[in-house]
Structures are given as structure tokens and as C-alpha cells.
Image 1: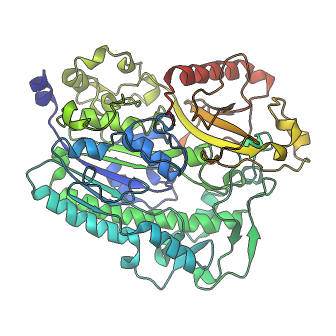
Image 2: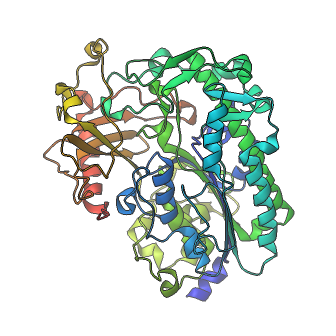
Length: 576
């Protein structure tokens, strides 16, 4: 049977491209103000996943989850306090299966030159130290730079090193994995001035403008869902970044609205950073073209999570809203009949490992691969059927077509995404939701009495007049006191809704069990309507929590039991 598979699907190399804090702020996702020609170029050769979601909207745990194919509950990382070890990661599986593996830039949050991960070459160019150095010379919260040349920016250096390494890898006899992790548009929002100026015009600012209500934290949403800000104060730009700020405003008040002026400054630099990063991506694609690597290479492009840029009064990641959980995801494979087509159902970053296992066809000797590593079943689903199409998928993986996760639903929802030439229909995966998580803790004496496990929200007309306090913080798993309330949030995103619920959990015994059942309500919950949404609606949704509206009771109960079923049956908890 192995021979049949090889005949249907040849082994390929892997190029994996990661961005940091990149939400789907790209022209391929309907953001027409964006200048991202190289994303467009790759999209023409890829299946573009319109609704891909990170498992945690924070760098370290999201990358750990993506690269191990395991949920945060299993890896045990929700913030910066744990590592992905001892679990198997994508590059380790490949380096133990005869691939040359090279990692450049920010891939895992803390990489190090572990030869079992990157056996050929690893270079992160001290991006962490550089980030701190950047913060020391920032004149304002967002700083276009007229002084430093492009070659002084880390992403330029990563691209140069990546193109050289790709050319060297292509000369070797082994198959290869090249992973490149770019820094922008992560903070600091420090970008070459010329890219900022591309977005410094009235037309662009009007294209992304938000209404007043969209710039403040929803009065109907619980305080626990507020997480802000990337900096304790916002420093306004002076002479387009050339001079030190002389005007600033404190951040972190849940009652405060962001302003369009603040958001414009952030977005002109963020989008400028994305266009600068797009240019670097182009250099890698140029080498792919030059060496004709498309015929034997699978390419995956994604990001660790998104970022709020003032939407809902928030400038930060870490939340359970679309702005910080949604990411770009592009998968290109030489045999895909759907190049340039879009898949519309929600998918997850943990799906990437299972997908690559199928698409790469790398040898997989369990004794070698799992030597000294616990054998844990991957928790994502393979998206290979979507990339390859039903015919090739069934030919290449006859034994898998019997597994329930691959039963293919009808695909009317997909703009009839079929390729007329091959009569191929793009399959629709069985799973139709994505899960993102977050932990939130607060000292008992700081929680306003009305919200302690109380499921009755103030009706929104009154709650506007009540000043609210943001008392919830990220949990420190090493804190052993008993004077705090520890909650874990699970957010389930379907095509039509986002349902988020927070449950009590015991973080000292590391979640031995989340206290969930259908009888006791969650501590707090939220429902947001996404029906009939288009790509242009991004940043304009999730402004009204409908969980307490009687007309949505049935929907809430259905999604709540679906979520609880997921936690009880699929969440596998790491034991401390």
C-alpha cells in the first residue's frame, strides 16, 4: 500500500513561513487597502483558508501548540511559563526521518540550536534582544524610521539568510524543511518610513475607520474578556516618528474608548510593517521560482495569532475575539487542483501538523521518531483532503477514508469551489468549529460582587453608566495561594457564531479537571453573531454579547452543550 501512496503522491520538501501578530489584514482576505503583492502571489498557488484560528492568542503557547499538533491543555502552556517539551514537534519528526531541517528567525518562542530540531542550520539573530533594544529607542508607540536603512531591520536579515539557506538546502541530496519566522508586524511598531507612508493618506484611513461603538469595550461583554494593553500608555507620533513624543494618554481603563487618531497611527505602522514583511516573503518566493522548487515542495504560511489595533478599546493580543484569534493560513502543494481557491469553514492551527504528515509523505519510523519522546496522538485534523481534492485523497489514502473525521459533507457552502478541468470537488471537513483558550485569574477581594458567578448581566442601557473595573489578569501557574478565582475560557468559533464560556479550574493540580457540566452554568459566557458575514466585516463584528438575550437562548444552549461535550471528550489535560 505504501507503494500505491507513493505513486499517487510523491514525497515533498517543506517551506514553512511564520509571521508574528499577523491578523488577516491582507488583500487576499478582502482588506483592499493592503499592499501585499507577494501574499497574493503565494495565494495563487495555494488553498487559502479564510477562517483559521490560533489555539491561544499568545506567541509562546500558540507556537508550541502549532508545532506539536497538540492543544494547550495537553502541552500545558497557556502563556510563558512552560515549554512544548517533551512533545514531538514538526521539525524533530522530520529531522529524525532523514530531512535536513533549518530554522531562521522566530519559530518556537525560545529556540536555541537544538540539533534534534534544526539539524542543518538555526539562526534567530537574537530577535528577543533586538525587540528590547527597539523599545529603548522608540520615539512614540508607532515609529516610522527615516534614519535606519532597510538592511538594518531584522526581517530583511532573516530573508537574506533564508534565501541563502534555501539555495544550499536545494543542492543537498536529502529532502529538506526550511522554516522562516518573521518579526513584523509584532511590536515594536518600528518600520522603515517609506512603508508607513504608503498608508498615510485619507482614503486608506477611511477604509479602516471604525464607529464610536466599535472603539470601546462592549458594555454587554463581561469584564473577564477585556485584556489590555500592549503598553501602559499610548505615545502620539511627532513629525512622523522623527521626534520624541510630547503627548501621551494612559491605557488599560475598560471604560475608555480608543480614538480613530490613535488607531490610525498604529495601523499605518502595522500595515506598513506587513508590506515590508511582504517584500521579504517575495525574496523567498523568488528562490522557489528560480530553482523550480514548486514541483516538489509543500509551502505553509501562517501566523501565531492576530492583534487588536484599537477595536473594542483594546490594543493587545491575548483575547478570545476574532481580532486576536484569526490568522492567515495558506497551504500550497504541487498536486493541489484548487490553487487560488478559498476554504470557508473554520480550521485550526493544530491542524497543520496532521496535514503536513499527509502532504509531505515523509518516512515515519515510530521507533526513530518517538525515541525518548512520549507518543501522543495528534489532536488536529488533516486538511489534506481539502488541499488535494476528493479523488486524489481517496486514491492516496484509501485506509483513511473510513475514519469519521474525513467523511465529507456537501460543499454547497463553498462557492461551488470545484475545478472544472478535473471534475474535482473541494471537500468540506467534518469538524465545523475552532477552539481558542485563555486562562484568567483575579484576587477574590477585587472582584465586584455582582459578577462572582452571577449570570445576570446588567441590561446594556444601564451598564453604560456603571464604571467597570478590569480586575482579571493572566494566571500565574506557579502561584499557590488560595485567595484568587482561577478560570479557563474556551471559545468555540463556528461559521455562524462565536460562543465563549469561562469555567472554574484548579490550576495547582494543573487542570486535573475543569469543572464543567451542563447543569451548572459557566461562570460567564458570551455569544456573538457571525451569520452572513463577509471578509470585509472583519473588525466590525462581535460588538454585542447576545448570550443573555431571550431570543438566543436556544442557540446558546446548543453551543454550550457542544462546547461542554468537546471539553469532556476531547480535552486531554497535562499533569503537572
